[in-house]
Length: 194
Image (cartoon, rainbow, N blue to C red; front, side, top):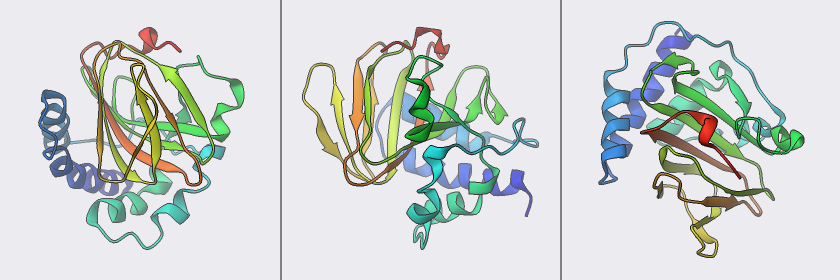
């Protein structure tokens, strides 16, 4: 099976998961994942230090979504998160894949969809961006803070929704967290700030 076929199978398996969240952004993500007809990925596979726990996290995956993700781990183009605005050594603790988007593996001008890995024991500081954002936690737990509320645990299968310019941050403790995310609205990363 080709990289395009493996990635397409993962994207198709993710689409119905977003149907479980009653929001316009979830519907946009689900619809895009269903109708994407990708060509070959525009970016070659790349990996960062933050990705080290991924094989163990996905070993023995039982549901179709994580099985398909495990099958395409070697096809993903991981990059440093934070649009260059986080500490230089962050790539050892935090990384993202832009699967779909203007600078993604598959081009799309109005939406970004991707993955995030956050290693255990890392504090992703409060940050904000103009894009509306929705996370779907695949594996692991993170303590999430939105606005000025204290951090609270979010578990696999949960969604976390951020409005445009709404401050949010995450802390992982004893285990890493893997999540899918989507951006709609003003998806230009220039508005990202900590």
